[in-house]
Length: 27
Image 1 (cartoon, helix red, strand yellow):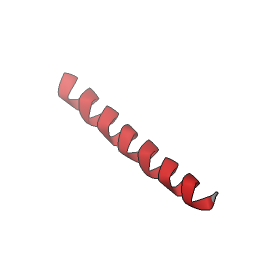
Image 2 (cartoon, helix red, strand yellow):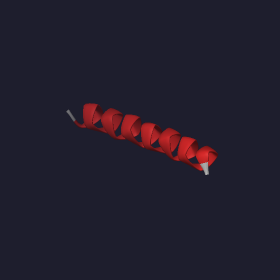
Image 3 (tube, rainbow, N blue to C red):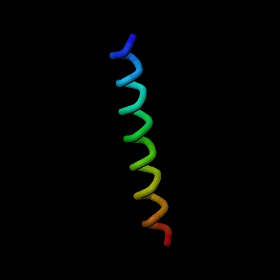
């Protein structure tokens, strides 16, 4: 169970990081 949660957190972090970089490019 803990492993699944860690994978979810990593996925969310990666998505947030990618979205953040895209936002910066639009500025």
